[in-house]
Amino acid sequence: MEPITTIHKTVYDGINAALPSQCQRGKTVLITGGAGGIGFAIARAFAIANASHLILLGRDRLRLERATKRLQQEVPSFSGQVMTQVVELADPDSLECVWKNVLETSLAVDVLILNAAYMGESQDILQNGWRQVWEQYEVNVRGNLTLVDKFVRQTQVEGRSKKFIVDVTSDAINNYEAMEGQRPYAATKAAWTCLLQHIAFEIPVSDVQIINMHPGGIYTDTIAQMLPRDCYEWDNGAMHFFDPIHYAPANIDTFIETLPGNFAVWAATNEAAFLHGRYCWAGWDIEEMRKKLGDKELANQQFLRVGVIGVKDAVLQE
Image (cartoon, rainbow, N blue to C red; front, side, top):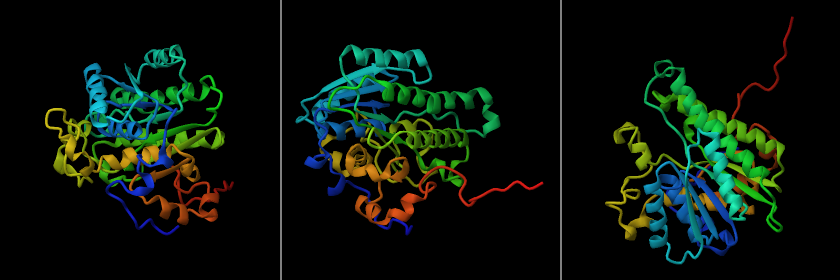
């Protein structure tokens, strides 16, 4: 396939969450890591798209409360309900409580946004020690798998048979050179992306639509806690989008963080069904993707999927 040449940095008409084609009215959306960063940007976009219920998961109760207030302030037209729950993705019992609480509200989750991730200290793999490396797998792989398992198995609600999973992945899965010091994180993201794509092979898009989305290189408050700003050429120039102290609502639409938020809403519609089980960047133009992802490319089961590219057949010889 020819490369995508139209790369967006801001929201455009094709993915604008305010358009009728992106409407999420009647939908319940669960977002991990929804209190800040990309997760909050996604929550805000779904609020603009008129989702009926937003369930935000996070580790910090105070941040979740602030996120709820911000959504109400920034999207005054949002008439849905925001629910929050403190959760530890590495703890299966904690995740079990999430679904128990959802069932008690008689809701069925229609859209699952897998945004939360754990990035350990910046060190080489063996310098970290196996325990810290494995902690990242417990969150980034097992935690996500637990949520997907519960999500797919949940009680069906009449009239809402199709579900959507949007996984916020990273170019760490394909950018080996840029991941010095964070290779355990890259390995866990690649492992989960691959596992989710295999799940997509087993579930028809008419039942559960699954898309892996790289949001872009965005310097969020979470990233700021782990990496210096000058270590990478980030796609955005301002981090106070996420800062409740310096945050300026009037400037919200000038920041690139709104792009992956709106793209995630589009990815949770039938318009994006052609990307089922595939990896894409939020900045790629959707019309150009639609035109260039022809029958030949989609017939290639390795295209935009995690795997060893270049080995078509392997024959063992004695």
